[in-house]
Length: 269
Ligand code: MLT
Image (cartoon, rainbow, N blue to C red):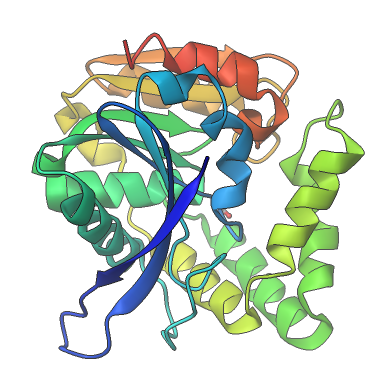
């Protein structure tokens, strides 16, 4: 059964700590799962109920302002701030380095975690994510998206994102689950994410310094981060393997949790 608890992540300015809801299931060493934008831990539920929970204690985090973690009033969710929150979760649940897995925005957070808290990470799963920063066109598209959510609400964001998030074989249930997640995130938190995503660093120069075991996973139908880009990233990371989950789009762990989890067993032996 999934167990939920709250971890407090202190603020460097001495202000109110963030209250982070974390959801765990399984046994053995800790593995943290970091969701994408603008989602929450529920995107990992099928993975959490897969064979992986016999190998790891799986801990899916609701990043601040998502799922059951309240928005804390931040105007910008920088990847560094979110990474410090993940470090606080790791510190509260483990005394040894842990396996870290991030999807898309969760992958950007994993890169920031590696840059700031490398000693807390034992291995990395980078799924449906990229190392590059936004292009000017992507930043402009985020400006438009921020206006859309502020004027037309979260359902408009869900309408715009859903066709890109899922591959053609995804089910109506998966579509409905994603819509439910997107529509439950406060508008201010979606805007704070977008600002953080716009500002995120180009991590490509750091790829060669990632020397821990790493698995890069892509979806062959991913239109947000095409598999060719994931392949290039994997080549730059010294100990990385690449796995492509066929028949899936940007949400490969949701779209085919069995195939995705089976790929991860090659890393989490
Ligand atoms: C995500 O899935 O987290 C987003 O597609 C990330 C992004 O907008 O760059």
